[in-house]
Image 1: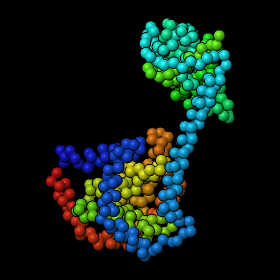
Image 2: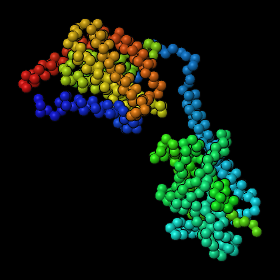
Image 3: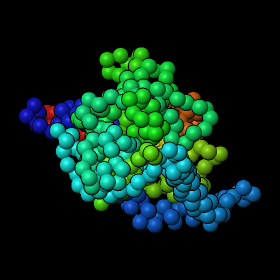
Image 4: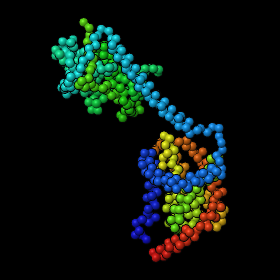
Length: 281
Length: 192
C-alpha cells in the first residue's frame, strides 16, 4: 500500500537512524532522554513486587555463599561519609594554605623597610580620561604624592596620579593597552620551582591581561602574576597583578605557542580600605 | 500477532531475568530469557511485526541494564540493545525459512545465531561510544575481550535453556495468533 505514511518500510530506517544517534549522544543528553523511561521501567518491574518475590525465592532456594569479605551496610555507609568528610577537610586545608600564603605576603608589606604604610578609605570612583580610577581620602597633607603605590593585601591596585591636599586619585593598573612585566609563579611555592617572566598586555575587552608564550614554558592555571616591571618603584615589585585563569593554544600557531589569560586582581570599591606606600623622609 | 500477549511475555521475561538471576547464576554468567523470547517471536511472527517487537525488547533491556560510566553513575543509554535485538531479529528472519520450528535443537541453533549477532552489535556500539570521537565516554571497566568472553559464556548458557524454553513458548503459540496475523497480512497483500 504505497499511500500508508507509517508503514514499516518507511518508519524503520528513521527509527534505526534515531537509535544510532541516541547511542552516541553525550551522557547529559542520553540521561535527559533515558532517565524518565528508565524510572518507569524500574517502577513497572519492582513495584509489582514480582521481582522482589522471585529474588527472595532465589535466595531461599540457593542462599548466597557466606563470605568473610562481606562489608556490612553500615560500615560501607560510614566509609562513604568519612570519604566525603575527608574531601571537605582537604578543601578546607587548601583554602587555609592559600590564606596563610596571603597573610605571609601581608607580613612582607608590614615589614617593608623605608616606607610608611598608610591605610586610607576609598571615597569615590571616578574617570580619568576613559579609564576608571578611585579617589582616596588622603592627600599631600598626609604625605601622599604622585607615583606612590597603592596596594590591597597582596594585590597592587595602582599608582597615585593626581593629588589634592586631602584626596588623591589612584589609577588602576588595568588601563587599556597597558603593558606590564610580570613573573608567573605558583600561588603556593614548592617543588618543582617554576618561574616564567613575560610582558603582559591588558585589553579592556575582554578585561584581562594576555601574553603569548612558548609551549615549553611552564605556566599553570592558578599561578600568580607578580610585578617585576622596572618602570615601577622597587616597593611595588613582587605585588600581585592577577592570577592565571586559563592557558589556551594560540589559534595562529597552536603547535608552538600558548596564550596565558590573566584575571586582574580584584578591584576595590567605595568604602573599602587600601594601603598607600609612602616613602619615609 | 497479539501484541498484548507479546507485551505480557516481554514483561514476564524481564521480571524472571531480574528476579531469578541469583538462582540461575553460574559464576558470573546469567542466561538471557529475553533473547529466547525474541527468537520465539522472530521465528513465528509476521515479518512486518518482528522489527517492532525486537525494538520493544531492546528498549526494555536498554532501560533495565543502564551502563555504568566512569563517573560511577548509571547511564540509561537508549540504542545499543535496541539495535542488537534488531540485528537478532534480522538474522532470525533470514534463517527461519531454512529451519524447522518444531525441533528444539533448531531453536537452540537459531538462538545461537541471533545471540552472536546481537552481542556483537551491542559490544561494537558500546565500544565505539568509548572511542575519543565522537563521544569518548566508555563504561567503567569496559574491556572488549572480557565482554566478548562473558557474553559468549552467557550465550552458551542461554542456548542450553533455549531448547526447553523454546518448547514451552511453542506450546503458547495459539495465544499469540501468529497464524491469523499472517493470514491477515496475506489478505492485505492480495487486496493490493
